[in-house]
Length: 105
Image 1: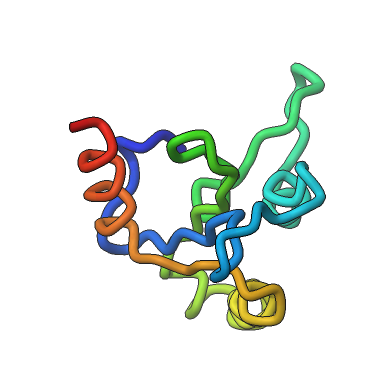
Image 2 (image 1 turned 90 degrees about the horizontal axis):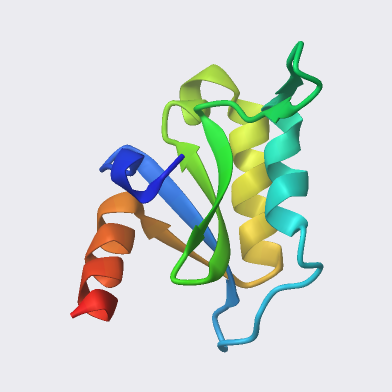
């Protein structure tokens, strides 16, 4: 998922805590996104369009589609609980785009 694929139905879990610390381990976003990933015939991991790791302004993030709440309610709850327990920032996709645009200006 690139930044251009983010929209209002995207929820971003940022790899930064509410007090500004970088979240560890560094591969947390890939681990979380691996739940819905598959391996292709090319022997590479293919992340689901509903749950993908991405980087916004150098910050590791997980982008999830809000439809997960209905399609995979347990997974959605797990992801939101994970973010809350680890005090990670959770923002709307549109806010992430606006933040990126503001940082570029």
